[in-house]
Amino acid sequence: MTSKNDFSTEDWTKIVRAPLLAGFAVTAADPSGFVGLLQEAFANAKGLAEAKSGVRGGALAQAVAEELLTAGGIAQARDSVREIVKGAGLPEIKARSLRALTETAALLNAKSPGEYAEFKDWLHHIAKTVADAGTEGGFLGFGGEKLSPAEKATLDELSEALSV
Image (cartoon, rainbow, N blue to C red; front, side, top):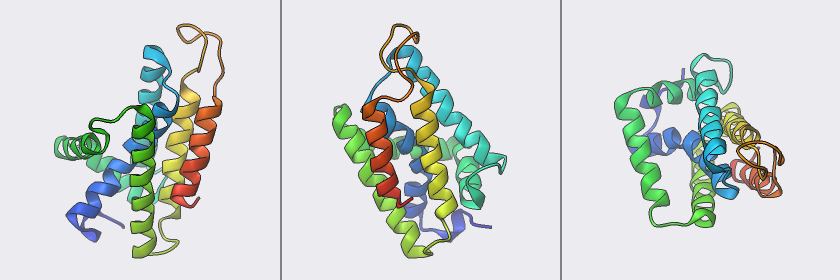
């Protein structure tokens, strides 16, 4: 089973922050207001729960979800994400998140090409779930559209970044 011990501390931090960045990229592409942000945060948490239970993402996703459920793991991931988004506006947060996810995909591809496809698919699934969670436009979550053109474009960019 893939675990934290298979990676350097720096690489593990990049991997653990990846599900958070996948959700951030979509949220930054087209913010959904307060209600939408809550829905998108819950969608991201749902993706972690699916990985922890072994439903989606494989052994690496399960190890990441378990790490994010520890106080130290979430603190380290949160601090790492803060460094990435520090001082950035929404378009730059999206761009930085996608760059970091590209680096993570390259790291996994270099370590073992093909072995981590399920993990990268899981990251894309999280982003898609986040995109579908909030309604864009409308008022207080009513009306509007489920997937905005900006979110669709971001999902396409994420697919390219992750090579899925």
